[in-house]
Image 1 (cartoon, helix red, strand yellow):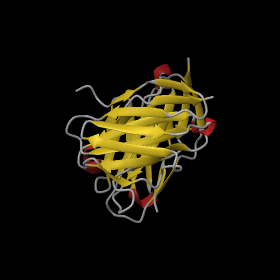
Image 2 (image 1 turned 45 degrees about the vertical axis):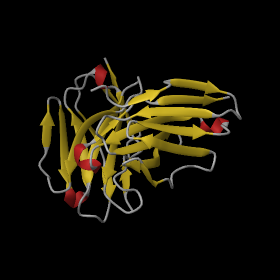
Image 3 (image 1 turned 90 degrees about the vertical axis):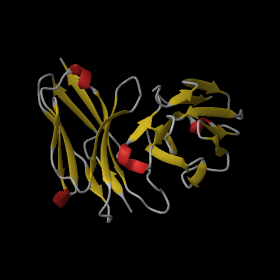
Length: 114
Length: 117
């Protein structure tokens, strides 16, 4: 199994530009999570999906952030327009049937907004 | 509400010393899972262990051991005979089901461990 695959690994963009982060979960996993890691706030949950349906997006910072999961094998996190304070590492994770089987994280996308 | 506290922000030890990383959690639920993850300098999050709330048996895996005590709401992690490769940030996390956050993981702030030769 290739694990959770995120792309790109690094992204540098200018303030105001649109940024799209991508995630391919492990095949067969029914939960997908997007986390953001910053020095100040640590690891915080942004949104999670169950069977492709967004369940809780209360962690999404503001309307500039949106996430989609059009099918079981692909999810995107979009920031439009991006701001310097969005600079962080964004992790995607997937799990099977909740927490009983653990969570597998992708390698993360390091986003820098200048 | 649930919360995970890792009071130790940074720990520095010399190679071959034993080191314990503390984790205290808060929850009113009786069913929950506790996790430890390792984040080496390369940045990925590596799963170390999962323990459910009904299993207080301590676990040992090589140089790693975990002490789960529900009476004190703690899930501490000990590395025996530490090595330079153990240098990383270690996260404790709690997962329980609720109508808002489902099965999402709640992470502590992490403990940065530095092992020097």
